[in-house]
Image (cartoon, rainbow, N blue to C red; front, side, top):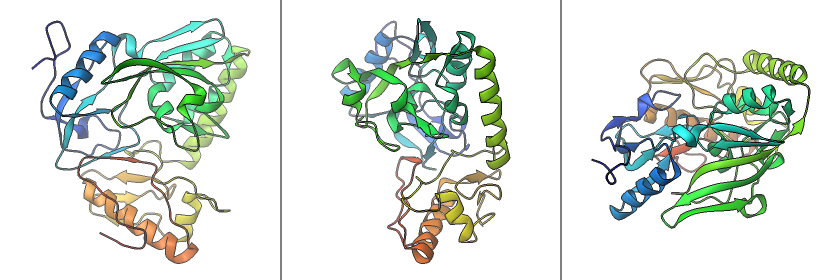
Length: 303
């Protein structure tokens, strides 16, 4: 099926395990890869007419999809919506542009300020949605504005309108970031390259970068210990349920050991929250986005 003539084809039943970094998830009711703003607007309108939710998936990181699949139109941006352009000190990226591509273009243009994103295996648009950050910086430090599409059309939102906070934005479900403008600063390309290399080395030494994960499981709480250190203190490194295990390298990551199900990962998350509450009196908030019929039980309870 297709939203309308000349639009990208909408596929049915595409397994989300193929589209997510953790490799978990059943079929999407519908899946589309728009390449232009017009195609994206048509796809969103098509879903709205059929009462289907619209879910942008980016590169599939930070997502845990239900084993039964998702009753939604899943969108992965492509073409010009994943392209990157340099305009003076502005880096203009499609919402689907990989952070790695943005970094490469910024370095080549002698622009710094985005190096922290080397630790975030996602997209420019996904970073807006959750105000992604690492190594003491985040999207709010470099973002100027974002072009957001929903059933009402496309509109540019300024930084203050996006209300970026810690792993939070004012974006609502169904809104898709089609384009992002970042304000960067002139910096020698070799210095940018060196900083990226240092941060990547640090990341590889402390995170399971060669395993299938969805990234950080929980937000860091207002506590002297971050989520990873807290869960490590709870004795959870290497703890396994089904095909999913809490990483032996970093306790705030869940690895797919080969045949993990969403219910396995969810059970690990519930157990982690139970232990953190019991041992530290802290309610951990999830950072990963749940897609489909998935719900994390209240802190203190297990599946």
